[in-house]
Amino acid sequence: MAKHKYTRKEIAEWRQAHGNFLYFNTDDKNFVIPKAYTFGTTFNGAHPLAWIVGAAIIALLTYSIFFKGHA
Image 1 (cartoon, one colour):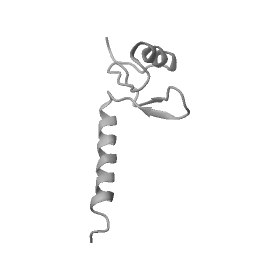
Image 2 (cartoon, rainbow, N blue to C red):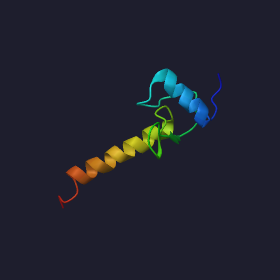
Image 3 (cartoon, helix red, strand yellow):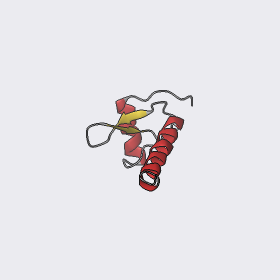
Image 4 (cartoon, rainbow, N blue to C red):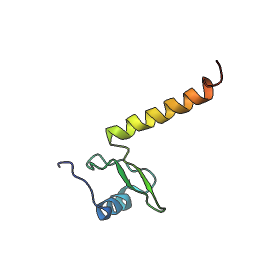
């Protein structure tokens, strides 16, 4: 099956079949998707850019906790 951008309806159907906590759909090209129960968006964990953004956030937090203020 070729990757395509899922619609809101397809995302809701995928969540019903696989659970609502984490969205990790390898067939979906969307980087961000609507949250299941609240307002806003969240990442598609299967999208490569989500991994890059997540690593950047962790690196920034690590820097700010351990290295900032040690000058």
